[in-house]
Amino acid sequence: MKKLFLWIIFITIALFLSMQVSKEIHTKVLFVSDSIKIGILNLNNNIINAITRHFNQAEQIKHLTNELKNKESIQYSFDFLTNQHNELLHSIHSNLDLNLPNFHLVRTISYVNINDYTKIWLEVDHQETITKTKNVIFGLIHNNQVAGIATLSNGRFIGFLNGDEKCSYSVIVGPNKSPGIAKYDPNKGFIIDYIPLYPKIQVGDNIYTSGYDEIFYPNILVGQVESIEERQNYQIATIKLASNQTSQFYWLVDIDNQERSFLQNNSNSQQNSNQK
Image 1 (tube, rainbow, N blue to C red):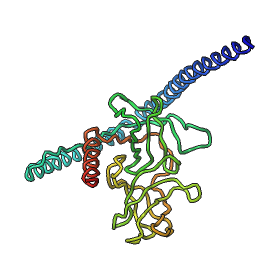
Image 2 (image 1 turned 90 degrees about the vertical axis):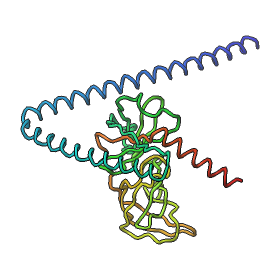
Image 3 (image 1 turned 120 degrees about the vertical axis):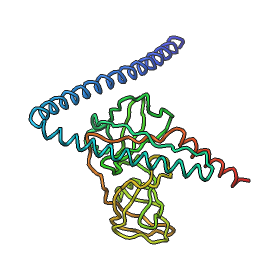
Image 4 (image 1 turned 180 degrees about the vertical axis):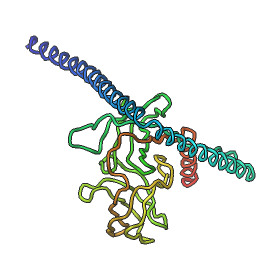
C-alpha cells in the first residue's frame, strides 16, 4: 500500500513537471515560429521594395514628394488646431491638457487558426512604448475604418477582427447618434446591439465609433445599417462593414495613459456622487 502511494506521488510530480516543461517548450516554439515568419515577411518586402525602386524611381519620388507635402499641410493644420484648443482652455481657465492617442503601425504575421480569418497574430515595433496595463484593449484601424481590436496575450499581440466573437466596442448610429454595442451574434453575424427604441434608426445610416469605451477615438467609420430588428426595449441592426478583409498592415490605437486615467477618475467620481 505504501509503495502504491509513493508511486502515485511520483507519477503526479512527473506529470506536473512535464506540463511545466511543455509550456516552456511551447512558448519557445512560438517565439521561433514568429521569428521565422517575420524574417520571411521582411525578405519578401525587401525584394518587392528593391524591384519597385529599380523600375519606378522617378514615379516613386514624385509620389513621396506629394505625400510629404500633404503631411506637412496636415501637420500645420494640427498645430493650428492645437493652438486654438489651448487658447480655448486658457480662456475658460481649464487645466485639462490635450491628450491624444498613440498610434503604432502593426503588421499581420499570420492567422491564429487555420480556416479562421478573424484572428491574427500581429508584429508591433517598439512594444516598450505601448501601454502594458493588464486587460487593456487596443483599437485596430485600416484606411481610417475600424478593422477590429487587439490585446496583449502572453507577450504577443493578437488581433480580433470585425466578426470575431471577442470583437466588441461602443458605437453611435445615424444622424441622431444613437448609442449601441458592436458585437458578434452566432445567428446574425456582426451586429449593433442595445440601440434605444427612440429615435428610430434607418437602413443605410452610417455607424461610427463613439469613444465611450476608450478603445477608439470618436467618429471612425464602422459601416452602414443593413437591416433592423426591433425587440421589446431596444433595436438591433445588422452591419454592412466598411472594412471586412484582412490587411497586411494596421494602425494600432493606444489611448494615452493620462487620458485613460482622467476618464476613469471622472467616471469614478460620478459614481461616488450618484451613491451619495
